Image (cartoon, rainbow over all chains, first blue to last red; front, side, top):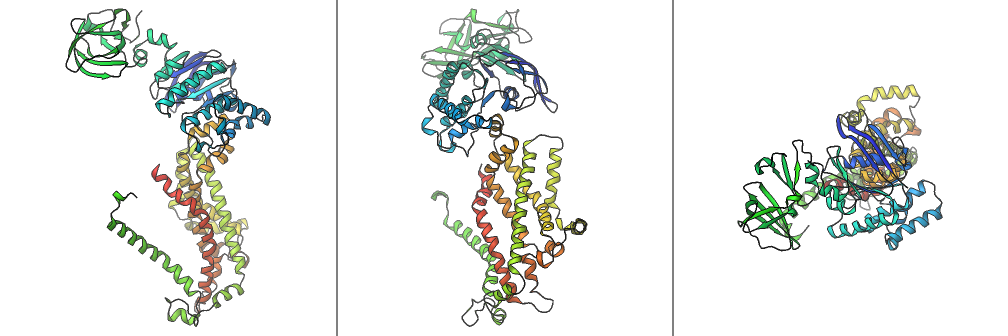
Length: 333
Length: 279
């Protein structure tokens, strides 16, 4: 139904280059997520796919068809915005149907598609209301419904959950995941929240400063980050980085180990350190250590542990899970 | 205001100041209205007093309605004001939308150029305007006034409206584009309803100087058929003799239509003035 090929997409605002040559293949039915820090160009990339921004150079193909100079409405895409962007003067039903109405679809067909989408999203009781009379979660469901009704080749989501509170975010995330399974549609989703990325994506695209750092499945990125940036960006709390030299490893410049791959011992271990802060989360305990060998070290222990600041402990890393990076910050091996 | 934050003395002082200002602002209106209902002697003997049965007189209103074509003057004023406001709002909003929405070469420069009119009074160009109108054969037509007033109102309209249009969510406009709305549909159906309070503000600020203007009607359209109310009222003011009853009556009548228009806009206006401050 919808595949997407991007070839050396560049986008500059004046002299400032925001996208520096993006190549990407999205297969039919894939759920692809763009993640990256603020200002990395992920939203701009999504907007160029939508046609809301022109590309400076490069080619965008949707289903094999070049669309770089096709207006947004004719690209066969639908977009869900962070701020919902519902038409304030239209009812929920008209909000969902407007795109089809503009395209000249039969009224019966519009009604059928709207009622199908509203059934899927349990919006039936609200069809006659205006956006102002809905809660945030309901508004975002209407925005998603508006996208479904268009039956697009590509769904584009621009940080759709950022404006929702934590509980609603989880619920809406599940709904989007369910929707993807049911519609088997191609979805491209932008977020800065790596939890959303890890839980929803078939494929994650990590962007930094206008370029792709790595593309892969969530577990590939977690287990085999291509460089320090990806290693630090994926996973929470962040991976610990240590200068290899200090630990007597000359084959690499930097060593990395995830907080959950370190265990603590009161008696003996590789790195001796002093506890400086402890966060008790119930399921996890996060311990911050100041070690002589490695500097500040974050350790994530499962379950409850009774460490307190100023305790002297030993950290034991899981050697098999050690990541090694060269002088250019690239992963070794 | 919450109880905790209201100091009675401060509130009293604020109200005192506001009441004083209201009195000062309303005094000329009051004087005009009261004296328009008195006979000539009473106007000069006791200008401050209310009309009594012995001084009450409608002679001013009779003169105004019988002499000259005052209904026609009203009609001229209304046509000029309403059409000018409509043109200012329509073209001003369109220009503001272009300036705030599209990136193009010279955008900032164009915005500055259009805002320049706020600082330079249009009357400086009177001679050139008159020459232009003569050349175009528009002297003694309402069209000439409408054109001048539209030009006069545009700078402020563009300045205010483009600021407001910047606050309209980009996502909303983009959603419209994805749904296949044309740029015109986005402008008329999505953006304009959202800047309605600003439109009302602009309408009021545009309306009052147009309605009260004497300068351009006197120069561009002094003919009997195109006289506006303010110009019409001048015919009772002579170099040696002034028919005060008639002048005051004409001015009292002239307040009415502008009041009606103001009431129409004012509910929107209050939202317009305050909405920028809190959000």
